Amino acid sequence: MGAFRQRLVTKGDAITTFAMIVFVIHIWSIYNLLVEVPAWILRLSTWELVGVVSYTLVFAFVESLIILFVFVLIAAILPERFFRQKFASISVILIVLAAIWVIPIHLYEDTIRSWGMLGAVGFLSLVLISFIAAYAFVFRSSKFEESILSVAQRVTVLAVLYVLVDLAAFMVLVSRNVTI
Image (cartoon, rainbow, N blue to C red; front, side, top):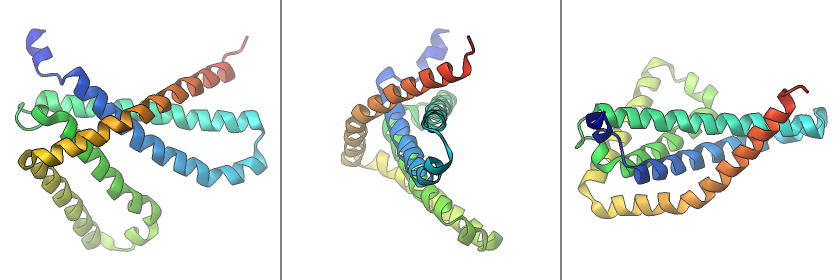
């Protein structure tokens, strides 16, 4: 068991990474909620609207936990120098880059589908190149790494608020689904 614990990331790195994951996923979830709320207000009662928002927030929290678990698992599998050594900074930059790339995919889905296989391969190549470049840049520039960690630590405060709202949303879901 001791050898396995050595392969895990530190608690501080995991919290920093989780904070950034929570921040990015919740920002995107809230944006998508705000797009749909005007239509929902016309169809749903207040309690139903609170329920829909609660489901979204709880799902965002669970999704954040799953992504953190994947990052921790990858760090445990790979040799220390590839990922675990700079876990927080690499994870944070990969999360931010993934969000940056996923936003246009989500917003312009029809346009991207019309590109065909060659366009998709080109787009995925750009994504992969950006991930590799960011990964290399974290290892080459300590100043870049420090700035990434600084931003991630500042986001932690907002992430704590999101988690508290998620707990309230979970309580709403429990109260909606428990019959007495």
